[in-house]
Image (cartoon, rainbow, N blue to C red; front, side):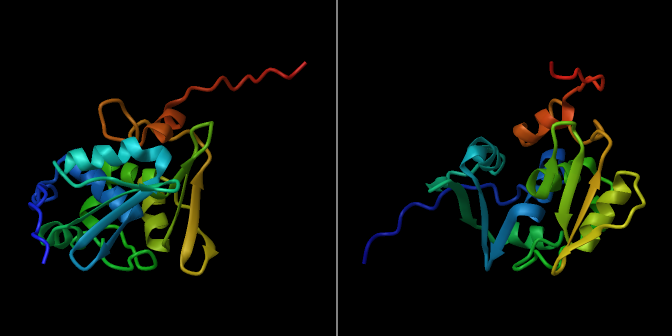
Length: 196
């Protein structure tokens, strides 16, 4: 039998206190994370490797980032973290049953995490979100919009806001997915010049 390696360090209490950063990562995992038993997995496009490194840093984790094809992934086991995440609806096979936790429905850090994970932002800074009806509806209310989410496929819906993304979601100094933050904060001159 091969000797077991030294357990890799991780802050099991990372989600025990509601810091702005913890709330952001709860939102991001709500959108893009997965749970299997006591294991937490987060897989992103290789272009977002730096963002995954931010998550590992937040956890004070020594776990190695896995990269293959065009994907980067962080996996770790923690009963404490899994239990904390489950309190916010982040459970196994959550994608069709996600319902935003009441305590975070009006929290911009949570929604920034969700948008960074499952949202879209166009070059004009307009935001869109794909998810369950409850997720899209709660986000629309947070954004001050009363329109109903539009059915997309199976149990998924879409919602979008054509006006510019409010600065409340993206500000310097907050953890965020940089490539989306750039689009969200861009200032566009509405007086477009016609091509000659």
